[in-house]
Length: 266
Image (cartoon, rainbow, N blue to C red):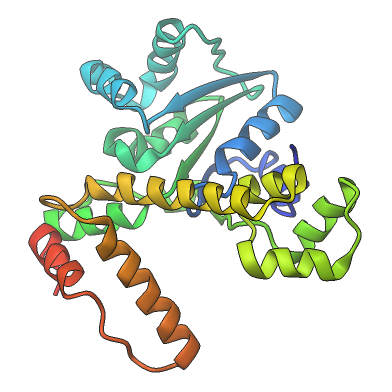
């Protein structure tokens, strides 16, 4: 299922901007999907670089000797051949750097791409805060923000109005029913799609559980040692309780300990 997103009009305006794009937001809100749609509708070519894949990040590390402001087009042409994609160094090409926080070289090279190449570049990130932590604790700008050459846009799950519009398009017009769904499950696109497809409580819960477990699995690698799922669950419940009561709630001692062990965060 495809849903109309309000942010698409913002992305359309960006296509006429000379800057790169950094589209940031949580996992599973549709960042990659909407950039693919933008590429299909507004560009002639697209080169997709999935930095969430260890093999892809390894390829760029192995070919690190070519990193240079004037050679980004050559590097992407080489990667396009390696990944059986098409690349052309022109304004009609969109290069998507997905989960860019996994490569400091590519993220820090965005300024060079913008200033020395013709193609458009759009990066996504679900854990961009980790770059700030890396910069702080490494005492150097390992991840260089090309502030003057980059437009940063935040993307979130679907809003209530977006869900209403999606439901209407797929034949659901009962406002009370839509409201009940949104209060129970929120606006993750995959959950909205599952609800419109099956109208099943259990199906929606299973999709939410998958998103939750994906978050845990991907977050695990940023901590030292094993990190039980129960710790995440207890912590999220504590956050909900704090929001509901507007009072401080004791957070998981184990979570605090893991943060201290991993990043020196007090």
